[in-house]
Image (cartoon, rainbow, N blue to C red; front, side, top):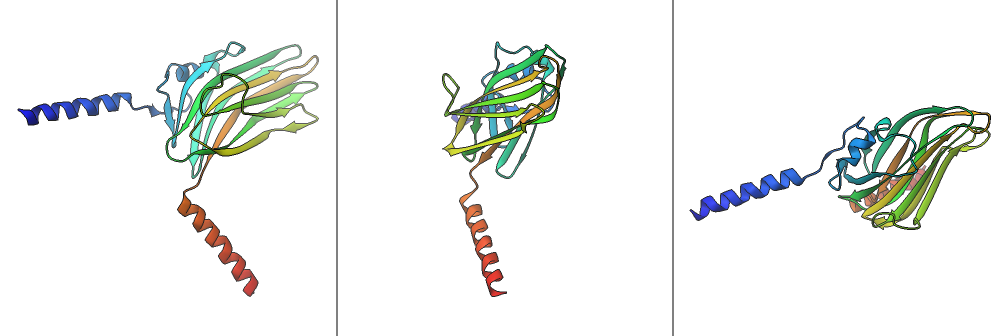
Length: 219
């Protein structure tokens, strides 16, 4: 009887764990669908993305931005397809917050960038990334990155690095502005989260570099 009770408890525990486990992030899901995930969020590579919230300054509806994601050794990239164009005297803004939690290796840096940016005249596209170490952004961000395209000048990709942390709060705000007489189009934007390599991998890379230097000197 005790054994049957133990098996029932184990089965119940496994079922509860399975229900509580976050699902994998789905490509082409809209921002509204990510918001609906709530605190559970979803898994992308070895990162948990959760607590999505569309912020009031947004003029782009939550069903008009779709996500994509990919991961490679020591990097996880998430991006958003916006595909918005505006003319003179008009602008659109998409702003939302979320939490990125590392599951295997601490986060040591963030890269953000504009994708398929086209501006004419005094039009402009900007991406402002606010990063808060250790949790949600409740005040002034610990790190702010700005990518921009104003036609005559642009910095489409920006990066920032910091001491290892296990979670970062993020606010992404992208603005497509037609200016007074111009126009702007933006395909989307992306975020890449860099993590600490395995100690063994770091040592291996260092050994490889030392070997190359040694071989060059011998030649």
